[in-house]
Image (tube, rainbow, N blue to C red; front, side, top):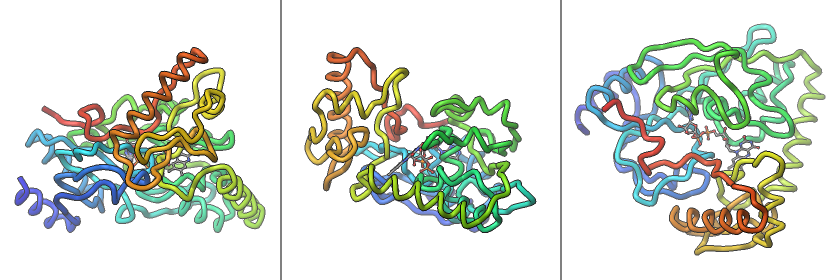
Length: 309
Ligand SMILES: Cc1cc2nc3c(=O)[nH]c(=O)nc-3n(C[C@H](O)[C@H](O)[C@H](O)COP(=O)(O)OP(=O)(O)OC[C@H]3O[C@@H](n4cnc5c(N)ncnc54)[C@H](O)[C@@H]3O)c2cc1C
């Protein structure tokens, strides 16, 4: 398998690695090794890799910046298709911005501001890729991907390309067509933005960034908000009211700065994070009646792993 994958990557000039530690590729700094890692650099290369996985019944998982992933301590027995810097071009045409899926939200927002285009300021501090952001309709400060995305292109598990327009994307809170079809891979995203004064755009971006630094424990590794917002309340408020700020299992801790974040204080394991989340879930349910659901995607637990077999 290894030699065949190496050959495939060589023919598309994609970087190929084996036994890649996932703790170096997730913002939580948690996770065992992935058997195989492909650095995607083109639609053709990605399509060929998907066909290979399909034909060989090899599980695959697409990863952007790893900022919404909790990876198993046992790693991942399959191929990580990494959509990152090698697949991250950004272009503007009038008030339309088109990004390859690996472009970072921050880079896209900065590029947009230089073109005097507004609409991404509130999203600019989210530490993920444009593809990862569309996957789960990322949002902040009452703005979300849904407000600006007009269409995207994606490959299905056989490597065939499709286009989806906004109506078919089914975007809602942390949900999209792609959360329903995790075997599909977003390759590019097109957004409609508004012309505005570049200095005002930059000043709004700075203000959102200041608010993030003030409220969020950015000095520690995490995957951002650990629980989704339950209808009718906020996870951080419920966790705080249950007296769980600072609660710790091993090196995993409910942040004292922001109760919605579980942080990795040093060498937390995935198992510790999951134990802590279970305790938080149980206490919040017992004391408030609200059910908290994990927001990060689990990797290496069968769920979320795609295979054509
Ligand atoms: C400090 C911090 C603050 C955060 N703040 C916010 C916030 O304010 N709002 C918010 O919404 N989120 C926030 N997040 C979470 C995270 O940054 C977002 O969910 C982000 O959009 C994930 O993008 P990613 O590229 O890192 O995706 P990854 O974490 O790599 O992947 C997440 C999921 O998306 C899928 N995916 C990734 N790329 C693609 C693709 N090209 N095609 C198909 N599926 C894909 C993966 O398979 C996985 O299921 C925060 C995280 C951190 C660490």
